Length: 470
Image 1 (cartoon, one colour):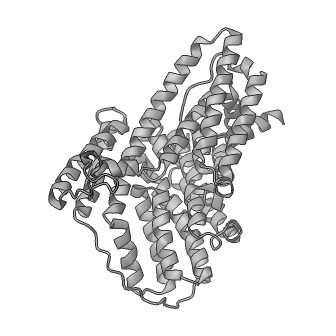
Image 2 (image 1 turned 90 degrees about the vertical axis):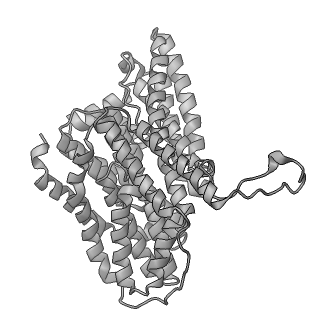
Image 3 (image 1 turned 180 degrees about the horizontal axis):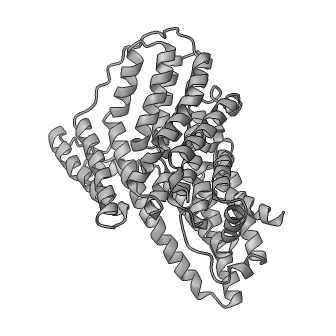
């Protein structure tokens, strides 16, 4: 019972991609008061993250606070055992892991912001809304687009984009909005599961080197089935009526298509850095960010820089503000709460690992249940906890598994978050965007259909990729 409690606490904590092994004295420290206090702080901080919407407290704040205190506890406990010198080494290792994640996400977020500012996503949304498709057709179109866009744009961005389409079309038709939002969440999470760029979980699996870039695409069919099964069932809840046509004329701005091509080139650059040069993908992403930087200079030259004098002091030349496309404005608009949240995630789990708790969790799950059962359970846990921390916990445990098992846990952690609306960032974001309409309980009403898709995707993976499981 005590071991299972430790597993639950470790998995409920914000585990991060700091794959440091537990310190040599971890077994001793796991029974210390500092260790138990760290676990409590870990779980308490995650509780604040869960209730972010109700408390209006950004998720990065409690988790960063917990990360700092946990490392204080690690330092105090290690000093008492005479192993204080190992703490600095562990901190430096975690800093390296965070730097790679930070730079990768910063480049990707900047490109997404640039595409949004150039009206790429708005144009797609307006085109769909203005065509006058039937509600059932739009249900399938938004789901299919979510599935195929999320491997590139990530599941969170994709869910928000398609959710905006659903709400624009559905209007007061709450049943259509709810069912379509569920389909979008399932499709975005499923599409993100077969691409290294589709979700933070797949990104970290790839950066860790557990799977090669092309191995992810063996999950395409299982991921597709994960969405198609519940979508086929939910299809009957949508009528064939046509919504009122919407005329929208919001064309893409200058350079939008070229920025999209540069984003694709950046992804290719990151893949080549990782696969051929054996360099961190983050370095390739930063090179790709320079593509956008140089192109932004070109856009400024074409669009012109308009200076606006400061209202209070029109003679102050330093206060003049450039308008138009500006790379550094796009960087400033990155999701900094998320980037700082991952700082807290990484350092929280790094501290927990030093106490030896993740080694205990790995032993209980993977040695006790076996990799297949453990990986299926990981997917179920991700529905409750959120798939990102659960996958990060697995990476930190670093169990010895064949490629097929790493594919399985990548699949289950990615699509398992769809079982409940709180299981993924895509679901949480859409609950905020469609507040009061798409809710936890309304998502739960379709749990059997989503669970059937979850089971079908696992079975298909075992059938298609069974030779890679051992």
